[in-house]
Amino acid sequence: MSFVTDIPPASSEDTFRHFSARLSLETDCADVADAFATGCVDFVLLHVVGSSETFAKKHIPGALHLPHRDITEERMADWPEDTVFVTYCAGPHCNGADRAAVKLAELGRPVKIMIGGLTGWEDEGFAFTGSEVTAAAE
Image (tube, rainbow, N blue to C red; front, side, top):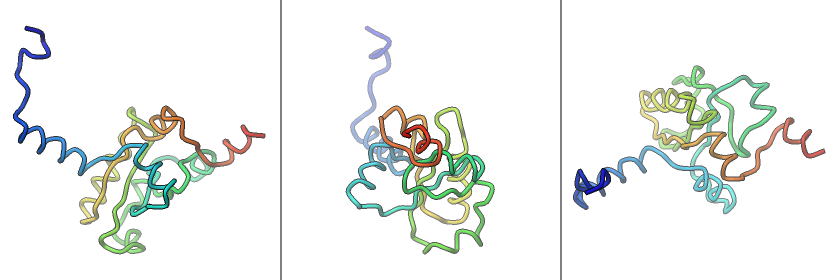
């Protein structure tokens, strides 16, 4: 018996509940990119870390810069209550997306995290936008 099967897999019902719960909390870079490519963007993508200058240099196309420290009830009033937000940060080494998700949830806002963040986006080969990207292309 291997370490893989030493502990038997969960039941199908438990597996379904577990992974459905995870998917209700997170999305990935490919799904976000597909939504933008097909024009089926039914969420607001939030870049939740860094300065305005850093955001201007390089970010995911379609994202809005809203650092997690600036997520307040007053700021979020710009969107309808049922708006779905997707947060992302620098990558797996950063917890800014988690911090933003907590704040949004505390405000009663639907939210998911885009796993991988900027690092995942780059790993998938998706394009960025910003002055740093424009300069590199010249």
